[in-house]
Image 1 (cartoon, helix red, strand yellow):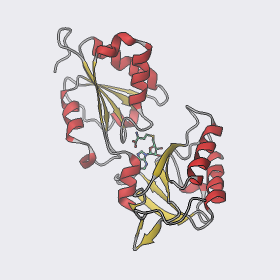
Image 2 (cartoon, rainbow, N blue to C red; image 1 turned 120 degrees about the horizontal axis):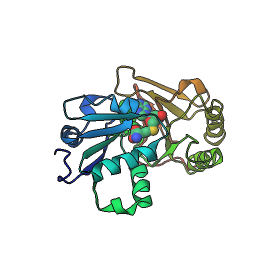
Image 3 (cartoon, rainbow, N blue to C red; image 1 turned 30 degrees about the horizontal axis):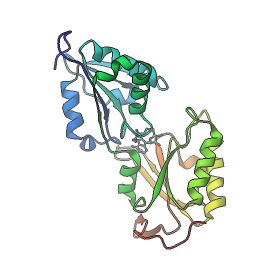
Image 4 (cartoon, protein in one colour; image 1 turned 135 degrees about the vertical axis):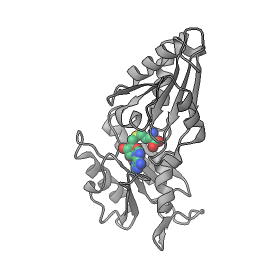
Amino acid sequence: MTGTATSPGWIAVAGLGPGADALVTPQVTEALARADDVIGYIPYVARVAPRPGLTLHPSDNRVELDRARHALALAARGRGVVVVSSGDPGVFAMASALFEAVEAAPAFAGLDIRILPGITAMLAAAARLGAPLGHDFAAINLSDNLKPLVTVETRVRAAAQAGFALALYNPRSASRPHQFARILSILHEVCGPGRLIAFARAVTTPDESLRVTTLADARPDMADMRTVVILGNADTRRVGRWIYAPRSANTPAP
Ligand code: SAH
């Protein structure tokens, strides 16, 4: 589709997956091939190959709503726009930001908007580790950019007490150096020292590293912002080099 004033514009909010090219879906590849504009956080836009006729709009972190408004304005002018996220665009990413922008400017609600799913970090990490998310689990974003820290801690504690395995996104950043230590101590208190915990970093990229340990030996510096942390449930165990959650729950929640 070309970006003329007479052609109808469209927006695809697309997930680029965890890193490996082979994990970008054909649907996302096809949308990128048709796009006039690509909008997103700098490292994600850097994953899109430049080509004639395609305008790349990399932007800094924490400007999700500006990006969403920009995408809507371009599509309203007849452009084909792909907004890129890593992983899945609906998991702690741009799809919600886009709908917030539409809600604030309902004239855009009639635009052709599609959300194109991707493989989210926790699923890519789980696949590399074995099957730690094979029973009930919860995903929690540890960042306090968009919710108070007390909410993060309350949710982590409640989910651990309920017996869920956990996938923890955005575990540690320079702006909140002490918070992840506090999360580990809550988990230790609720789940005990023997509980398995995995640190999966830069999964499916050349920088990938995987580390499985217990809460007794887990240290805050095992995680950074490229890590997704997976906490096992009370039944999660090792088999060979793998960890997995059995399909049935045998140990009652603490
Ligand atoms: N929409 C993304 C998540 C964005 S939040 C998704 O669905 O995966 C960014 C966080 O995702 C990072 O701090 C990290 O916790 C996690 N993450 C993203 N890519 C990852 C990867 N390749 N390996 C490990 N964690 C990753």
